[in-house]
Image (tube, rainbow, N blue to C red; front, side, top):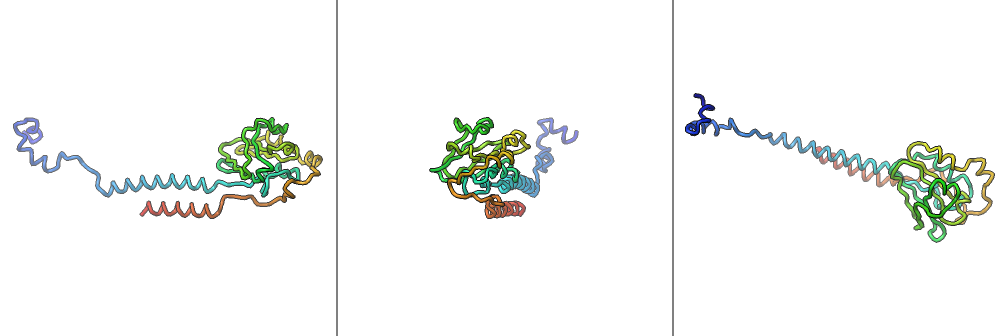
Amino acid sequence: MNCIDRMLDTAHLRPCAPILQSGLFRHKTHPPIKREREMGMMSLSSVMVLLMILLVQVSSTQYKVGDLDSWGIPTDAKVYSKWPKSHSFKIGDSLLFLYPPSEDSMIQVTASNFKSCNTKDPILYMNDGNSLFNLTQNGTFYFTSGHSGHCQKYQKLIVSVGPYSAEADALSPSSSSADADAPSYQNAFGSIPLSQKSSSSSPLFSTVVASLACAVVVGALM
């Protein structure tokens, strides 16, 4: 009778004790090195996820509407209709409307109200003078001033995020109609010059975030 058979007989448990003590039936454990390697891989995966989140934040852009220092009645009727066509907006970007809060405001409206310059019952109303609108989804967004008569004087803006919107293009004033109806009045805040460069997220912020992300990755690999 071998030792395994004797183990089944309670009367012969004692002779098998050396075999049990030898570790033949002990539970196998992973070596410490393998455990450390697994923990390191898990940490690296977490770092990569964090890095992707940071990169998305860094790539987001804050646009100053019209590339202007003031959201107001334009001296050029085509300012706000031309500006969106020179940019490609994406989810995560934002629009900054700057204006004297006592003299103007910003409202988001529906497509039909945008076309008719109906400022009643807006989707969103902001009048803090430093209004930030975050683009959180694809679609077409319509903005104008909440002050009476400003929309009719081309203080209105269409921004599309994602696929091209034929509806937005149809609602934008054409060059011929804008030229024919060009306003002869003065802007309430003085002349608004056209700028060639859009305001974007701070380069310093991008640099700091990227540096922190690299430091985290290096720390995880050490």
